[in-house]
Length: 314
Image (cartoon, rainbow, N blue to C red; front, side, top):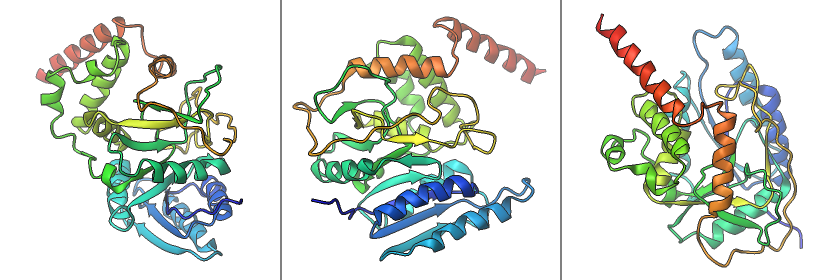
């Protein structure tokens, strides 16, 4: 029996015509009945970006199947944090669940069926806050099930429900209080990983990093939420490079290989995080971030902030 996509797709675009076209071609193959497109405005200090933004948005005019298209384009540049979080607020004011793709995330065909089936299966299970198409554990051992539960939050190709997105705390309002209570200790005994995220959350709370994804990770963890990850990687990020907003450094996660899932899906017996895969992914992430070994990174960070504070006092 052939698969028919009935789930809405949210497509996040900006100014990269080539990668946007590649992702759109996949969306066109799947023919979603509803397409919601979010786009930021051009940066005023980037020459020629207004033209690139216009050319990229024009790709949406290529919709040639029966589809209800909604667009949410900003005339001014709001930045990743405000534009994407606000755009997803808008999307979930229209639909109750959706598959979400950015302009550089190439999905396998099985990704869409995997998301659609699991959106239905876990629709009312508030323990589950998102379904990811990413598998960054580089695991060589074969899972007996089609997917596993994880505390890692991966958003290069994912799906979620309005009921989960409503938990998003974009301003991380209670971070200082939660930080004092040892927020990260519940997730991992890995002190390096905990320190990495505490540092990042502090910078996000202080608005030193323009990211919507970090506050989303925080919001999921604050709710003790779980993600779902596939046994095989279903998403390849082709957006690394000079034109990328955040992924402009070399990374082990650049253009990862993918593999199709088999159906029917084999479901895990228990809803609990796979600590083995979680720990493996933590180590890979830290290595890719080029962090100093713990506790050297902690002392280096403290020294840096001590110097900065001294300089600011002068």
